[in-house]
Amino acid sequence: MKSQSKKMPAQPLDAVARRQFLQRAGSLATALGLGGAGALTTLRPAHAADYKALVCVFLYGGNDGQNMVVPTDASRHAQYAAARPGLALPRSALLALGSTGFGLHPALAALQPAWQRQALAPLFNVGPLFAPVTKAEYLSAPANSPLRPDSLFSHSDQQTLWESSTTSAMARTGWGGRSAQALGMVNPVISLGGNGRFGLSDQQTPLVLPGPGDTFGAHTLQPSDMGWAPMAARKQAIDALYAQQFVGVLPAAYARQQREAFLVSQRLGALVARQPLTAGSSAALDAAFAPLIVNGRLSTSPARQLYQVAKLIDGRATVQGDRHIFFVQQGGYDTHANQALTGDPLDGQHARLLKDLGDALAAFDRAMVAIGMDQAVTSFTQSDFGRTLTGNGSQGTDHAWGNHQLVLGGAVRGGTTYGQYPQLALGGPDDIGVHSWERQGRWIPTSSVDQYAATLLSWFGASEAMLDQVLPNLRNFGSARNLGFV
Image (tube, rainbow, N blue to C red; front, side):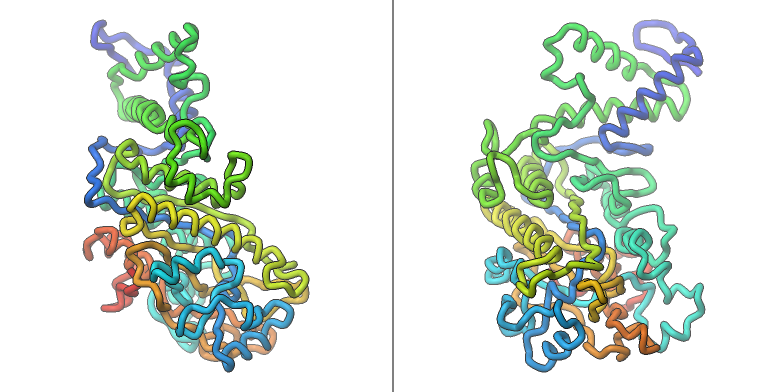
């Protein structure tokens, strides 16, 4: 294996040098959240007039959608309340969604203005599906049938199914990553919530960014460190190493990756580090997030992540590209116990999680309106699975299948609901349970993750051919490819 600079004849790299080069390359790529051949493509200017962004908000643990969106008509609310004593929200506490017959959990009060301007829509009973399936078809299908998604009710497996839009727990790529690749986006999926499967493709990993105030890039090799001669010399030596022309696919790929990683960190570092109410921060964004800023810091994890997304959208010319997909996450939704504590609708673990979520999404929505980008940005929730309609013996709920989601943004056709709300009959046609002990209200989905993703991606600019490429199960739903909410 040989390397060659532009000024000197080719010289052999000894084994130690090769090992050190690969170790340095791999560790730097990991630190920057980059990996895989072609992790970043050639940059091109943003086209503001055609800019669009999708923001996936994943609720890890399995959000109780049964309490997030609740029927308000007397008959269905009575069924709902009878199935979960101690957990059901009283009709008087629900935030009515117009004349739809449904209401939001009161902890989501911050989202009411978005509903009122028709920028918010609930989507009912979504989940991983290979094809439309009835209860009879599901029960009669053999264990290895694609009509039975892998490892139902398992956290890690169902997270994979939602993030990959497949029914196989062995899926390696995510629908966000595949979309970025198919659309030829400048950047891979930009994640503020870790290196999840959602942003993976067979050529890219997500660009993982830290929160406001944190350093993005190689430690001690930031522009602010270049005033100290030893660090400046170190950076110069590393740049010279990566500038060499390497013979061999692997070292050449690593060198290219590191050059790009340094360029990206230098381009985005200052923007990523900027905090609210500091020099250079956006007054419009700071005002939108003001209720969540305490002592100059954002008070919750969802707020920190979504503030960072808002900054990147506001600074899209620096980020570059006219299409961005972002990933944000909030954990803690595995509410087997203490979901509600005192009977107060705003008390308990689930209410606290939803308040943090609703407040952060509302602040982000205000920010997009303030900078004139709300029509160009659509946010949407995902989660492992729904939870049982029935409660358990620990003031909580257990793992289920279909779940309700929220979609938010100026392009959303809000002011109404989408999808088919399940029949609230334990052991009924929508409940997977047959025997008395398993009749818990675990709904068979009536809309698929593929249809959900296809609706978002169609708005985002994906062609029908691209949708079939990114979402291989979509063709199984015939003409019902688009759910119409955006």
